[in-house]
Length: 261
Image: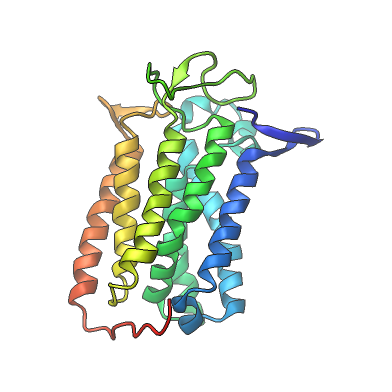
């Protein structure tokens, strides 16, 4: 895989990693702003502001968790800040954005659960396309394997080990996450009318995806045996999602009255 598209200046490159994340953000914005939930609960201007600040928070959260789970790669301050070379934990981005959205919406007096549901529907689409960026950069690489669809990195700028066959875990994640988007958008949204239910399923899906992928990834430090920090975070997200779904289902909040979704 070729990480960089072209050189800009000094250490800066236009790379496939950043391009894929940008495409994911565009797709999220394009489709989410047309959804019934966006049209009924948040103005277009406030939605764009939310996307802009949420992107920044997601980058910061993703970088922080990446650093914490890859301490062996951090040898200098430059290694910590050189985000343009790749290195975001999309799970960290999810956590950061999930904490940021309620604070932003509360400051604007906007219904929180409906926008969390909106983010939950299209979040997997954004994260799924971002995983293609991980694939090009070579981060989030998998364990060695003899499977016929294994990937071998040969470019010297790749973050993955070179010249050995690896599980394409980034593509596994992309496939699972994009499938999760279709399930939430076209199967779950027309049937679930309680505010918070869709976001709950998003948390369960994201937590399950990451927990399972940790068994074939090989780029993180282990805490105990084969257990990693994302393993623990993924399990916590699953528990939170199940709890939140039960709470949302039993709540007396007014149901969505979908006109067209």
